[in-house]
Image: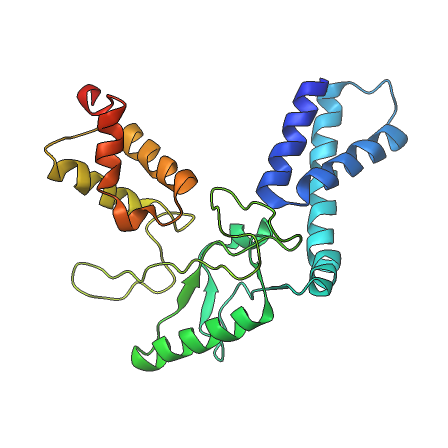
Length: 234
């Protein structure tokens, strides 16, 4: 693998999972020791991928939780139970180790989901991105504030047009973007514009990276785009 490609892979895995970059470096080191040097890259790649999945899963289950606990963070349970009416909006969040919080936040979420379930029996509260297991200040992109173990996103509760509650469902596979982008789309239409989906998605990402509270002021994106001349081209 070319050095530049290797750096990109490690950086992306680190930003996505925090520990993935280190795991990949270990996998490459093991592969250099175990696999024959004459083995072609096309045969090494699937073996490395398999080793990465196995090692990453083992560390995430066996090693990361106790080490994270030393720093004051614990993983949120990913599946709902009869006595625990919250769950991950997507198991992918748990697979990527983006579900770590301080213990007080687990208690708070338990109380919140319990109150919701008592008020609306059968309701499951879904959580989305929380924090990585280690290091205060480590970025959990695209969020700017999820770096101290005390941040947690909660998914909206959805129902059918007839009012039937959709238990355990979100509007997108990862729980994000569907409602936020609908708000941005409606904002543009309120100003008489019909931008393509790519512009709406770009507006969402600009807001996420520039201001974690931008949805409170979504109309401001219209004027931000006006200043850079984007509105005239949509």
